[in-house]
Length: 110
Image (cartoon, rainbow, N blue to C red; front, side):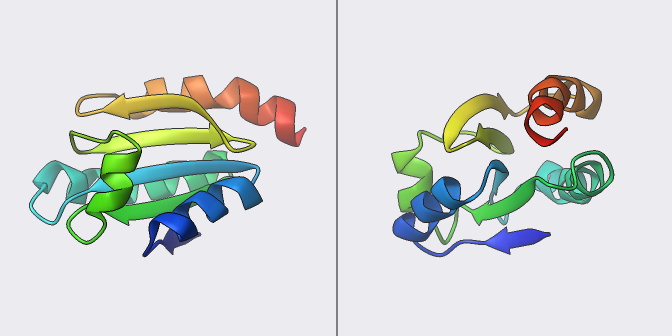
C-alpha cells in the first residue's frame, strides 16, 4: 500500500503512472506526523483501496519538498490523473479529508 520515493524523477513518474495518489510529507522530528500516519494508512486502505499512498520523508528528500512547495508538516497532497486536486497542511481532520476525496474517487473508480 505505502510506497517510498527516493528521487524527484521517481516522484514525478509515480504521479503520472498512477490514477489516484495521496502523498504524505513528513519529517523525522514531527511527532504529530508519527501519530497521524497510521490513521491515514487506515483511512486509505478502508475507504479508498484503489488510491496509492506515497510517503516522502522530507529529511532525505528536500528537493521533492522544495520543487512541490511543501513548507510545513504534516502535509498531504492528493493527485487524480497526475493533477493536484487538494492540499492539506498542519491541522486538518480525517473526516474532512475523507469527505473531500470521496466524490472524485467514486467518479473515477465506480
